[in-house]
Image 1: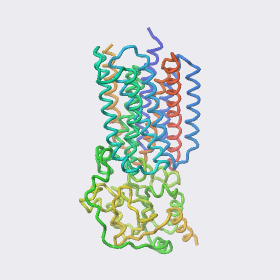
Image 2: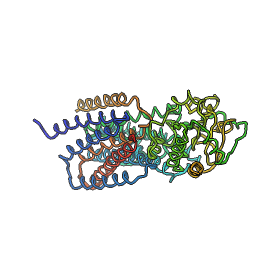
Image 3: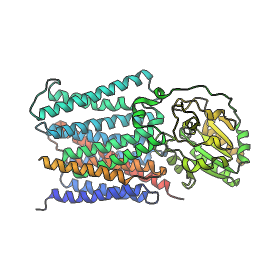
Image 4: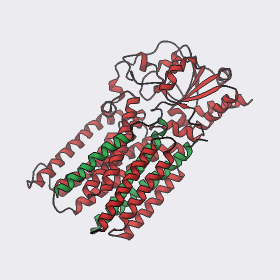
Length: 463
Length: 91
């Protein structure tokens, strides 16, 4: 009466509870580390009870050993600044695993039925997650610079073709399951093989045209999709652990995706299928002139300030300047100046990117503030130091209804007394929108590499 | 046969709602760890991959790599999340 199968089911209930508690704890600061531990115990439990009944123990254990070693090595050796691409890569492997799993299951089915259809969906979402995450990985690690624009417009059509094939193949399976052999696709084996290729191709053409600034949204969406692929694979295998855990990931990923999209004031359709360029109606030049200053001038301004707000962006990540930024912050504090950090939710290339970098540099997260807390008191801040951030401090978002980023919640640094903008050159931000902040009366431009510039400021303070 | 799948579908729908309710409010500091932690959980495909059949070369190869990649996801995902959260601890 009490079979191995029902023993596994009972254990899966416990792992589901652990996953739920783990995720809940992960969403609160004080309990997050314990939450990750709880969820990993859930995983351990689920894996152990599944190991009781494996077909080919040597094969499975060696694969687990190799995979575990590779994963652990990556995780231990990766630099904190490379976390975004690492998460993208792991996520892609999760998708790939669902893809292979469903492929294998479909090979062993001896009739075409509704499960074939769900298996095909698993393959499509898993394949898309895999290749999409891989592209995100290459983009984030800067192996892949911007894509040529002809490819950008072409890939939209290619994606549509992939989706059409998904539709065709799904109807083919449905018709076959009712005993009808449709003639709009070749025989099942060949159509299935094409489908395997199309699924991976879909991820490529989906993520290729999406630019760096939209990466936070893309990564969290891919994360959500890898969960959905796992849940669908769970239906194919009739495995409740996969269904519950996969759905939890899918849903939480979706919540995060929507939070990201909301911080950019754009809906998902606009991000994935329109992009910034075609949504822009005006990109006029800004009147006024920029006021470049030297690091000596900047030092004098900072030295006399009694409150400084640091606003980091992707430029800080690229220059790996977080440690010198922390050092500068400490020196300012010794100079009896109040230092805080303004973190915009979509600054950088992944959700919470700036938080990770500043935590690596030992900045306490009591000093980090979100736009909604900072904006009301912006006019009382003496100096704002913008380090490689652009679109998230662009006043067009509040002042210019025609601007493509109009309506995006920003850090309203232009309302402070003085803004010092650290920037490599005058090129526009990811959104391709000119930033009037640089031309404001109270703005000063400090050109150069963020790390070098801040190091200079630090040595000025020490002298 | 069909009843089992309907039941599984029922579990799927309920879990999605549970997931949506579970993470309604989250401080931006935790966006990355939550994503990375959730990503580790999506490595649950490992459990499914362990049960795959291994008749024939193709299926053996598929099963091997399904387990391998899911293991990278699980081990790497949990460790990297843990590293990140340790760094976040208050000094």
